[in-house]
Structure formats: structure tokens, C-alpha cells
Amino acid sequence: MPRLNPLTDKEVKVRANPRPGAATRSGDGLKLHRRRLQLAGRPYTVISLRPGTDASYSTNVFHETWHVLSDWHGARLLGRLLWGLAYQRQPGTLVLVDRPFLDPNPFDAEPADPIALVPALITPLTARAARELRRQLPLTRPPDGTVRWQTGGLDVAVTQRRRWADLPPGERSWPWVDRSGFQEQVDRVGGLVTLAASPAVLKEWAVTVSVLGDWSSYGMDYAELDWPNGEVQVFRDYRRRVSAARVGRREILAEVPAPRPPDGLNPLIWDRGTAVRRRRLPPVPARPQA
Image 1 (cartoon, rainbow, N blue to C red):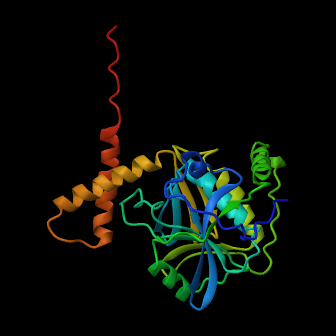
Image 2 (image 1 turned 60 degrees about the vertical axis):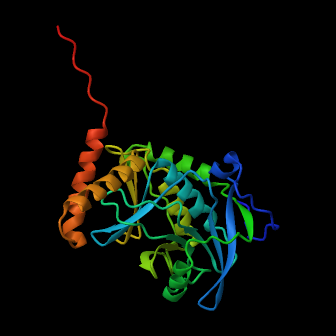
Image 3 (image 1 turned 90 degrees about the horizontal axis):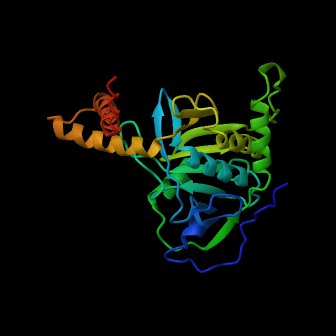
């Protein structure tokens, strides 16, 4: 069983420029920042990524489903965050993903919402509290301390899931998860895309997200969370898609003579971003003459 992380680590001095190795590690014992905030009259402990962490995310809503978007590495890190959160015992704890770890989405380059991971049984995140948190973002004051995020047991669970997936379909038995009482909820609350669940479901999500990319199709994979309300979607070339969407938005906005509503503008940007990705591909070498 993973060691509990009560979020009472001793106070430490925060480096203005963390050592590259310390900031970018994303395995067990990942270092994260901790801040104490008062939101809607309640104390909260907000855990966030440290500067220099090599991960980025985005969000969008499509067909009334909220998506968290990233690449293979981002999915692995998200799995770590979800798994460790399942073992927290400090009421009011949540994990926040905000700038500089947010990108415009890789489709039409609309800005992303901050992401909150919430252990719902101990952290009631009301709309008022979420709005107050959003108004304070990005969190620029020095953190109150640093915690090491303990995720022992996740690697074993991921290995077991991969072995299960390799079994013939007739031999698979889906792991049973206790969904009595509160189960899960993905929603946009007070300007935050929130992924809230009980400990058992947080662990299930962690494993499911951690194996994204193992069985991808055309460089894309996804996992349903609180379906049909939520989904994590990853792309092998996520960052290239974000870059192309930015260029596509800039080009379309320069060409469109008058402002258009998003439902008329964003499809144009999506198509232009696809064209940008294609023109950036290296040319196919000519076949030698016989």
C-alpha cells in the first residue's frame, strides 16, 4: 500500500530556478508545490506542478463532453497525480493544473480552462470556492512548502492492467470497483474543469490514464471518465498540433474581414491547423528512376 502523504512536510526554501533534474522528474516521489488558501470561507490545500515540469495540457468541450488533452507523457503524469490524490487524508486538498502548464487547445486554439483534480469525499469544491480560486490564478506568490507525491503501487497496477489487456477477450474479467455512494463527476465548476471522484475511482482513473497510448490508433488514444461527461484524450503529436492550431487561428483571424461567432470561426481554424501540420511535414523523397 502506498505511504500516506499527509501534506505536512517540513517547510523548505523554494529555488527561483529549480534544478532541471528535480523539476522534470515525474515518477514516484515527484516534487510538487503546496499552498494554503481560504476559499469561500474554507481552508484549502492546493497542490500544483513546479516550474520546469515538462508537461502541458489543454481542455475543450465537444459534444457536451469535457476533455482534458495532452500527450503520452502528460497522461503518465496525470495518472500519478490521480493515484496520489486517492490516498490523501487532509480535508480541502486538491490538485491544480494552471499556467504555465496550459496550452490553447490543439483544434482551434481556444484558451484552456484550469484543471482541478478533487478527492470528492474530503474536499467539497463549491462553485463559489472555484470562482474565488480562478480569480487568484495564476498563483504567483511563493508556495508554503514542497511535498513529495507518493504513488507506490501505481506501477504494479499499471503492469497488471497491461497484462490484463494482453489476454484473449474471453479470458478478461474487468476489475471490480466499488461505486456505492458517490462515484465520479467531471464538470466545469466556477471556471475550472473539475475531475472529482472517490478514492477507488481516482485509482481506477489513474491506471486507465497511465496506459493511454499503449494501444493508440493513428497516434490518438482516449479514456472515458464519468461518461458521457468527461474524457482524457492524448495525441502523440499533441505539441505539434497546438503549435499548428495557434498558427491557423492567427492566419484565419487575419483573413476574416469581420468578427464571427466561435461556431462559425473555429471550424475554419481547425481546417487551417490541419493544413499547417501538413505543410510542415518533411517532403517525401522522390522514388529513384528505374
